[in-house]
Image (cartoon, rainbow, N blue to C red; front, side):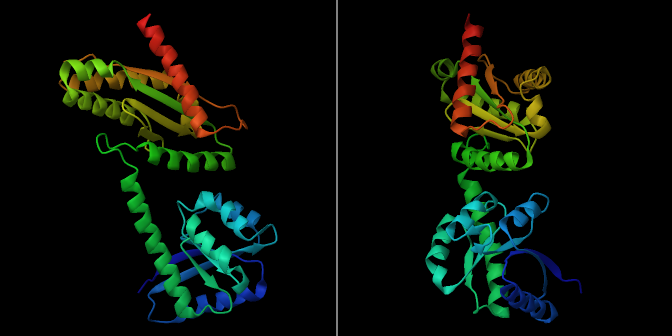
Length: 301
């Protein structure tokens, strides 16, 4: 019978500590009662770990807090951008227990004390960490979704956008942000009622979902305010005539398929930072909002 494989990245510079863990893994793989195979890949520094993580996502990371190029709680902070995708278990000595507890608050799933790790303890810790991470991911995803439109809400957007920006910086991707606003939302609510206002918001969500890739982050961040964050090749298209023509086409299709009496139109602002430019996501949103407002004024003029 083929056993399910769990890929583990071990970040540990001490050869003796690494050997003990490798022996535990061998015992797990050779035993009949576990039903799983642990595949262990070892690196010795944060830099080596980062290089591996740029091209490969393991099922779990075993992370020593004391590395040649990083030490203590700073090591956890350096891995923070990976925590949303990969469960991490910290390896610590008795003297590092305070840092281990702090790491749990940051998002680490568990910690193991060196010298006290057994085959059974390692097996349970790995499985529990993976399952807890799955459960937390589901709970967080529910809390990050806008109930009316099914898009991400502001909280979900900010969490995913920060992770996307960190990934884009590591891999050298371009990034763009589009700010969209539903025109005349107050008039729609005042004239046709909030039920029709909700219909207009759902129509906007439908247009944006049809216009962009699944990998792009589409969110409703306020009453009638929407944002899209795109990276890579999609980023270069975000402000182009190609994508704007696609949006206009989808607006007309949604208008034709959804019965409504109000005028349905959107205004946009697109911002693309220069390569290497430092920025905060809040700044991108603010500047793209200003560009959208300028378009709205031009349309009124």
